[in-house]
Length: 200
Image (spheres, rainbow, N blue to C red):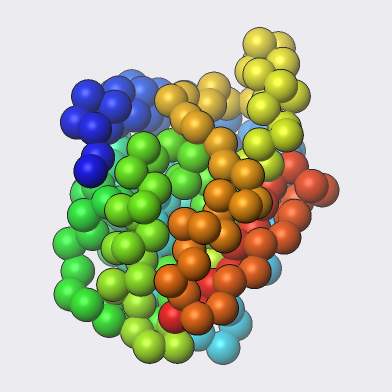
């Protein structure tokens, strides 16, 4: 079960920094490069609606063929995202209690959310529930071995502050998503991230 105090700390952290994060995202080379990598991960054959879980401030992931349903706990982040999204819908909600019917989506993506969720099992169950049979999950989360590097980058103001988090090992990730028919965990973005690809 999600911890209400922890959930509020995450929401307050990103609500209070939404404008700062918006400015940072526009001019940070690493963030721009990372967004290009993320866009390549989207299933090109999967058109229509897809769920972007913990979307935060998203850039350039929506197209005429793909309609992103952006779900995030931070209302202020979604307001910022809405300013430059062309083909997205926005929902303020907790990722551990997704407000959609069973088997609603053929694709769920989640970029850099998992480490900020305390109820990781709940998130996995919700993703499984809202995916259609044969639907796919694409998820990224920082490699736990990069935590010291990330702390140094934070201290030097070379990246956006990380906020409340707990990183997972590759074994942890396989365990959280073991109910899926197929799960693959690999390294991504020069080894700094884990990439989870799972099929229901």
